[in-house]
Image (cartoon, rainbow, N blue to C red; front, top):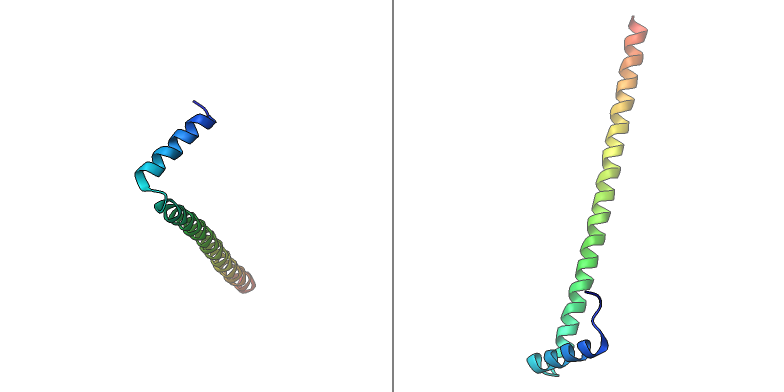
Length: 79
């Protein structure tokens, strides 16, 4: 089951025109295009949010590590 051939695509196109009418097809295409654009935008925003969260986590880990090293040095000096 591969890609449909040209006659099959023409039959599908004819059925779509009969079902929706020639005037509705541009509106349908516009809606599909907008949906794809919104989907890509949401994926990009999610990736940016994930990267920002990861950077914040790394920053917190670095600060915790610095505090731990400082505490260890202080403990070593006292001993």
